[in-house]
Image (cartoon, rainbow, N blue to C red; front, side, top):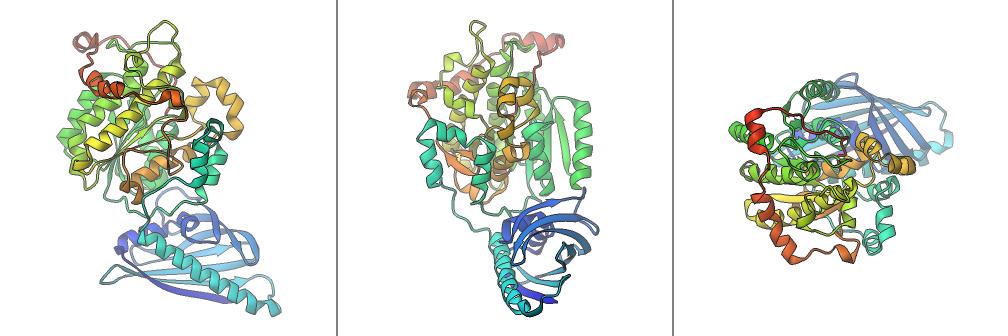
Length: 486
């Protein structure tokens, strides 16, 4: 038997330290030997919960099947691990100190093969491994990382169109994640509002934040689908603090009613994630008479975010995350073209123009709202394999499906902007794979000052042509199309 025993002190409340460590998926963040980890059991972490952790060890790469054998909230967790080479029992105790938490970590290895003369060298190697791993846990829980900056490789790619676009693929995600810091910030006291949460990036984001214990308000158009979705998320994550607001965000009357309901509830919003979106072909109008791309992709998040500003300001540090798209790199800001006309209509161009404008709003809000302590950033998910992409852009999906990111990979930077402490140290930026990136790959898309100055007055004063008629009559279905959340 080889026993590893390490102790650390971290400046975090016991509850936060325990909640982070008990989910053994986090080992891939702090354990230098863990290269991947997944939770195999639905529901909250409890006795019987299983994890699979892939580790690089002195004896080679192994897949460890861990099972929680004992759990006392905020006090102890014990796990039994098994692989082809050894059995291991991990015992982790937590205790409160004057400045935070004391963590006592013991791992006992029983090898299934005789070690012979190699045991001494193996023991020394594993002791070093154990020390480095627990020090990694200490750094993760200290959560003292600098403000994010762009890497040299990403900066080089952003100077050229093709290398920059190449980062949108799954490979770009895989390359970026090798340099990421852990995310140990506690979300148990946070309230997050997510639009477009029923599928794709929005659903992946909701699931990840629910697993971290955040209280969620999901804005979904379909009430029946919303009810089933909440049940599914609660079953998967064990988080019961998941609520739904039913609203069709392409209709400004419903956006306003949603704002009023949330203001009446009065709960501060720690994070607002503007994710709802769709790519519409052919051109259509909502029952309020507004061109639907403009209504859903730009006017709606503008009015929703402006309307919820008091609740964002009431949070300790309100955050806004605007989901844009790499397609915006193809378009300059032209306010007179934001409402797409019938002649020469292209759904992808209309989509890209609205996302460009949302990026400009991100920069303007960041500057104007800094005095309120509100951080506003945008992200684009790269090329993600979501239901909306497959249905709205079938040709693109067929051509690129082998290099597309999963919804979870596409949503990762949304989650990071909502959770990570260092993400709150910058505002007004565009992020891809947790790095600030250029907002322009082409010189011809650079914003003109006059266009930027005109944008918010245009959105503020825009009047829905048939809004009053629709409110009075309450009939006429909105035109729907396939959703594309990014």
